[in-house]
Length: 224
Image (cartoon, rainbow, N blue to C red; front, side, top):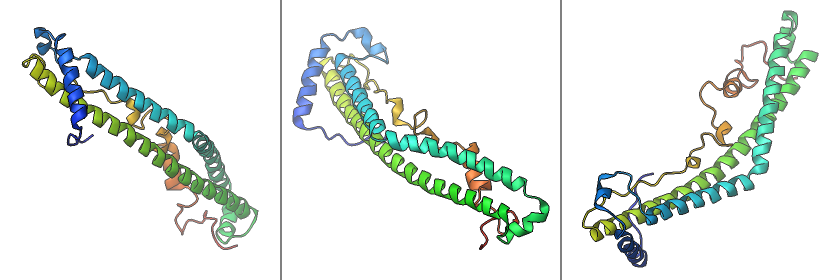
C-alpha cells in the first residue's frame, strides 16, 4: 500500500511513547545489529492487524457463501453446455449447415436452445462476479486500512523507542507482515480472475456461441 500521512492523535502518540519507554528497558545493545528486532508492542500491533483481517475474511465468506456456491455451480454447468454446444456443431452434417444458418431445422432449434441457456448463464455469472468482487474488494480495503494504521502506529512507536534507547535499535521499525488474504490469489475468489489461457475464459470469449463470425455457417442466431 502507498504510505499515508500520519494521522494519529495526541492521545495515541502519548500512549505509544509510554509503551516505547516501557519496552526500552528490554532492548540490548546487540539488538541494533539485528534487522528483525521486534518488541511486545510491535508484536501486538501485528496480532491485532492479523485478527482484524481474519474477521473481515470470515465476514466476507459468511455473507457471500450463497453467491460463491451459485457461481461455482454456474461455471460447472457452463462448461458442460459449451462442451455440448461444440460437440453438437461438429456433428451437424454439411448438408444441414446451410439450413442452420437460415434458422431452420431441428439442429438449429437444438443449438438455439443451448445458446440461450449459455447466454443466460453468462449474464448471471457476470452479475454474481461483479457482486462478489465488489464485496471482496471492500473487505480487502478495510483490512488494508487497518494495516496502514498499524504501520503508522509502529512508526510513531519506533521513533519514541529510538529516542528512549538513544538509538540502540534499528533506524526503521520491523515491517508488519501483510496477510496473504489481501490478495485474491489462492482464495475462493480466484476463479473470478482467470489467468490468461484459462480454458473456460478462452472458450467463453473466443469460440462461444456469441463469438462466431457472422459469415460462419454454424451460427444459429438467425431469425427463425
